[in-house]
Image: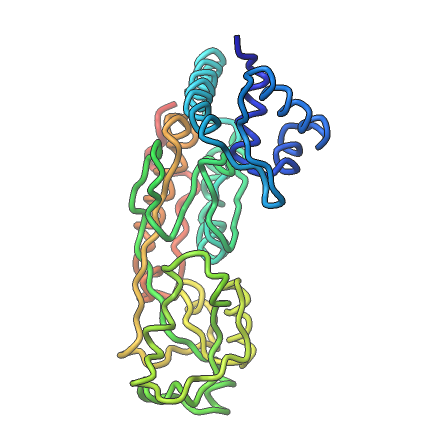
Length: 320
């Protein structure tokens, strides 16, 4: 008979793919976890992981066990929630993963109202320049640039947003304001590190820099994996940058450039694992974010310079 503790260890190693990360989450030391994993394989007389310098990756047998282990974990989770009645309490912890720019400039300010409305809920906001992996249980909810394709997820389109080309007052005074796309080749640009872009949705500069249009390639004095860093660089006159309107419009010294030629529209998606989406506190945050971002459509699309914050005490409180 399988030991539940062995299954929990197997799941964490499978999700983390690195023994050090799994050991930290389980509260075990690295060597103990390694021994427990090998002992479990010996008990089953089956190799579950391929071990390499790049981490632990499931074998075919491991993949087969993973499906059963995930199901066992889901049932255990649901049983625990129903017995403690946590499903119906507006309390507990929610970890929300979101892209760095949206998380810092939009979600964090909006969440002030949610925290006031629901003081029993503890929010952990992961605002990161990468994709948060729900399958590896990195978060309860995630807001992503691309629509996730993993099975077992509840997915909904959250909102649209727009990006434009911006330059600072100081940069434009020194280098001039480009009047057409063909002039970008004579300007300095700020962008992402090409081989470290975590989503194809961020590759919006390439189509604008078609050699047939801009002629000579523009100079990139600075590239960064962080959109917040790009924003700061543009503010300090380093070059022109394509930025989300919800970031740039709050800075009075940044100005739209080539407004008639450059407008990039993108979407954000909200997603959760099915079992997490059933929790009252997670549903509450899901609905709050949808309503708050819908109310800020003009801000997200660059038609307003001000983020509209939700009321601390909504007219209709959700039923508990």
